[in-house]
Length: 405
Image (cartoon, rainbow, N blue to C red; front, side, top):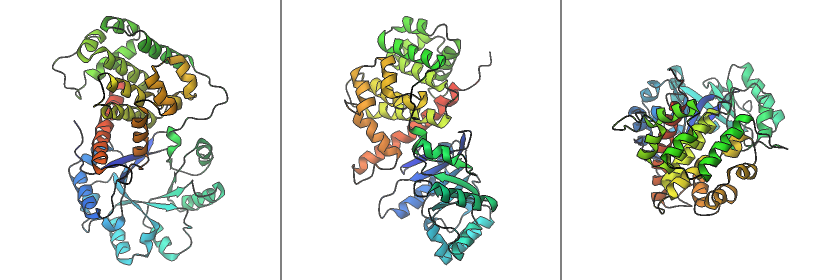
């Protein structure tokens, strides 16, 4: 059940102060000369609802050249949760500004990607500021003093401020002191530096479960016994495998039945997945990112020898374990005792799965372009990514449904 979007896209979250989703930015992969194809693809994804499904109905901003915006803006106006990212350069394009003004008057949402531009430096920029609801400042290029000054200036004008390019935790902590609506950047996926790692009882319990699953090589009966006493985990596991996403011919009544139906290795991965989804003190978008990586790794390993797809799934899922657990990967691996193929990929990007993980990370940051790989590879990655986002959203949603009985 993959989303039918003909163009490679990436959804990049912006989180509020409570680390909950504020909005997605939709970044479109573009090759030189394909502007018309980009426009047609964007319009088709909006009109057929694929883009809405990709962002789960949340607020989203399309990062595309403003000059490609359709003359007839109704397609955007009929989607009040979709807005557009604007660049400062549009301020000096009079015909484009006239069209943007008309769209703004009809309710279209705009976010100005100000980067490090001085917004008070020209009259055209001031005019542009009057039609946008949000401004994104580049924390990677600006000093924190300048960020503070500009954020306060925009805040007093009633414009919501986003901090972009927040790629380390020190910058993130300093951004929390500013009048910001949301924060965006790689900080979300990077482990916080800790002097001495301390694992809570719940974290240690989770690691022990994962270690038993890896070491004991359980059969269906043993697998059922391992999680028999964890009613919540068992409930989530069965809810997930019985969900409409899989459209099973019959309902599975026990973990043992599920292990026989799906196979023990796959169910072991599912138990790891459900255990990680129970970490309700971590940002949901971080957990979704781990699920997306797991699914992408598994699919990319599809042509490898038997059993490699399941190991690749573990690599993707555990690739953010240090960030989720707030502890160094090497420290966590002493508790897990993973097979060398998995641990090498997680620590050194080595072994058969390291290159797969590196490609996924390159995809996440938009660096997988035709300069590095063949167009066919990009198309394949795009399809796998879109399928992975849908899978991750479904799994996370099911795992976090409240038990009603």
